[in-house]
Length: 123
Image 1 (spheres, one colour):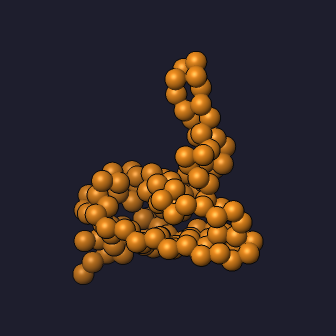
Image 2 (spheres, rainbow, N blue to C red):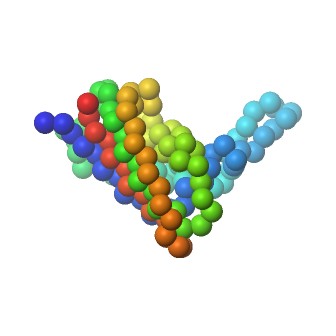
């Protein structure tokens, strides 16, 4: 039987690409406060979801990811949503996002509502 990990969140998803602080002196870019808060939130809810599935969850297998996003304000690009969510789950739900072999993402608008549903399905 395939394992399915479900993660539900209720927070605005920032665009990682447009929310970097660039230090020209150090030639590095750093995530801003919104990106850090979202990443921290994702890691917290992912850790909680994975802990409910142990010992059934194996972080070393290939996965399919399904992401459904409801946004309540400015529209965001779906690839940016995918990027920040996959990076946030790395090291918790799977070892590396290279393990994601298939993806499906949908988004829809609902005024003043921000939520997302993530399903990781073991292949």
